[in-house]
Image (cartoon, rainbow, N blue to C red; front, side, top):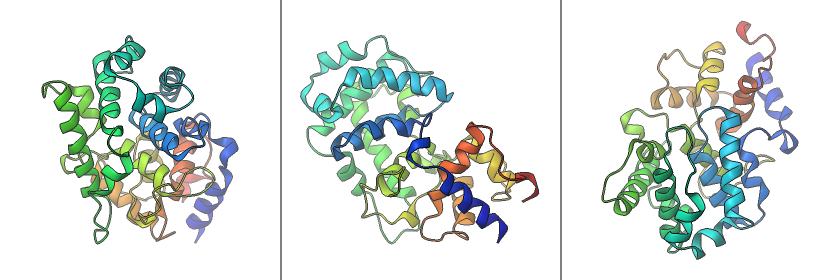
Length: 264
């Protein structure tokens, strides 16, 4: 099948030397699993908008966090966090949104890992991680709400969207790809979750190329489209359909050719 050959070709073109300018470059700065997990989570939360703007914000964050995100977030107090992140904004994340987010991380990481929290919502009998994402997002929103008298802002809610409300949950699916899959790009730290349960992170680039490749006929970028594209990709790799995500996304970001993509 010609499309499968093209997908496999492009998948193999991207190795660790070609990560930049993807925000995945930031968790690759660390070696310890706890640091990688937290750095990946932070990077995914801020992974929206222009890639230059994303990397600019993440560079500022990781400069402030220092050599160990885990140590910083488990040893700091709320006063230190507020001092470190005052003045920082990212698109419609306000300074307050960002301070609450890092205060929330400080609170939960003192008790358990992001992995353990997420795993509580995983049902291995389900087709994908939709309900696990919903459970995790609701947990995070409740915890953040406790820090701001339940006055969750638009920015805070945007950090943890819900699939049942139609969101494609691009950033959460991106984080899960990084954590669950294992190759030169992705870390495979959460290897108890089958890669077949992942859903492709759908953004503008994925939407455009998926339509050109006839991987979806849907017009609205939402959770249903993400599921639809993922199911189509399972025809080419039923156990690991999301492995094509990085290549497909970066063909759009870097304005590369998909070998006459419009004809496939």
